[in-house]
Length: 260
Image (cartoon, rainbow, N blue to C red; front, side):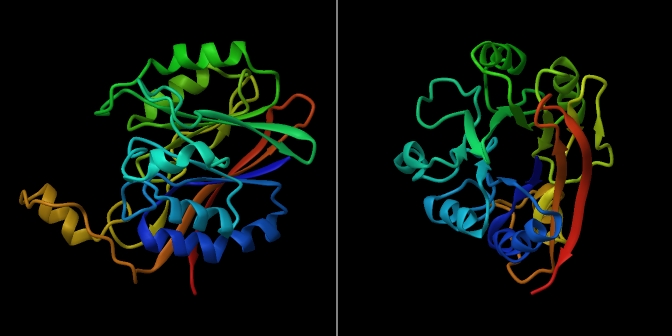
């Protein structure tokens, strides 16, 4: 089983990058299943229904979220009917949607779980280790991919080591900066502490650089800007899994420029 995971899609430029690049990647690498993190796809914060459907139409089989899971006002209106969408499992007092979803991929079960970390994050969530332990008690063995959305690369690695051999892969998202640490742990779990992002190549984590500098250095108000006409890039991870043991047999990073 070959699975492609693409990092945080940032704004319109990120959506276009996925639209242009994803079909080519699927064909080139003979991908069986595609997961895309879409938590920044709508103007850099959240995922509205229109952009959710855009990413599905672009070829995403599953879309995960993150700390901006509720950044779009219409999320609660559509999430219960969005079969391809996985919101963070360890949210507190939110009952809509699902935090772990099972998919049938050519007769093989693939489960995708979305989890929020705690270190340096503003959202108060259930403890990820306890939440995952509870989930695994009720899950049958399968290819199980965890999108661990967190700021600390150490927290992501700790989580992966805790569940090595119990899940198939732990893929870090949120920082938008791809880390050069893709590997398979001793128990067979694939790990990369951040897969990166899909969006503007020459800014700062997908945003127009001057808007970030002005806010972070000079204290200007407002959100980071996104240059919709910026050169594009796509980051992700490409993985192979044994269909009997469900463990990862190969993992490599994807980091390409995208031209129209």
